[in-house]
Length: 462
Image (cartoon, rainbow, N blue to C red):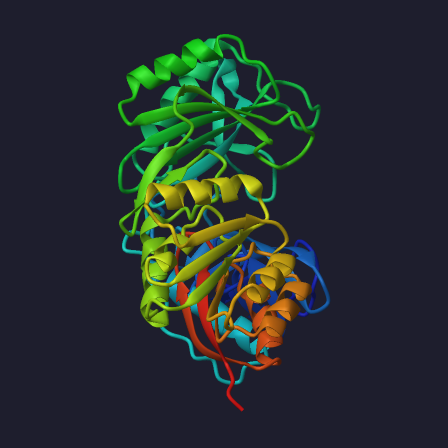
């Protein structure tokens, strides 16, 4: 089939035939037309598509898929009926093996292009044992639908319009009936729903959480303030769902896109669920950061423990330690493990989790990573053996990396959910006396573009 207009033109609205060759980091299909790159959503490498050009720059542009002229052998039927609309997933139409290939290439490319590494010691990506039903936590914005119904779901791509869901194939199966029941109860209660444009209404979000290994669940309502009869509804939910161990209320009155506010109350049951993680008992609250894919997190932490091969006489510092997900398994094998975390609430939970597991060789401190790294290392009788980094997506602040180089641990473990900032930071560390010995990507987020990675560095011996 030929293009409907002269291909010598590069104009908005033009319709072209396009062969998709690759996937971008944002999840779009990537094709080339007349030496220009064209990005297309809901495209699979190997597809030949009819595309309308929508937004154009001199060297690249964006297009909208009109029809599939020839489908890729890696194109599959999405398991979700709203996969082409919902912003929760980008790659449900892409065969899982192709997703893994794209993510591994994403890590390799970032380390070469941004990090400047000529040789990357990368291992094959660790695929998820189950690329569906893996999410242990979901947070849905809410809106009113036709006839007073309640809509809950992810935003439509590029908008703040909610795509209504009654089930989601990537969330843990036990959360589906809880989602449906919660929506029906919210409608019956007649609670006002929050309008982000007008900053009016009360109920903002519905958050659900499940323990992969105990089956315990938490339900949390995020609201700007008081909800009538919320106590009675909480008691009813707790009595009707055997897996539900707590119903909570989080207060967020601010005009912000941040989901949770500072205050969380327990309405019925308890404020936490218990997860068994590598044999350790962890208490996880509604706002606690914990990896959404429990099985893959266990796999990656096990790999860290295996690769470090601690002998029991080491001092380990876990920066950005959260509630101790990595600190506690390390403490079981090291002489001393110190956790650093900016959020005091997470530090309190980490201390509680250490006590819950009888680990007395741990300490946890709240504060700035760079400041505490210096203080803690100065208190040690010998150099720190291992520092573990697991920063947010923005990576480490430059001062953190400079402090790390100053204290000079023998080994560094850097975990990251953003290959670009990982590559940037590794470049700095490897320019200051460290060598990159291993890179292990892992898929924590099947059906999406996100990829997790753990890297190992050793201090160079001159």
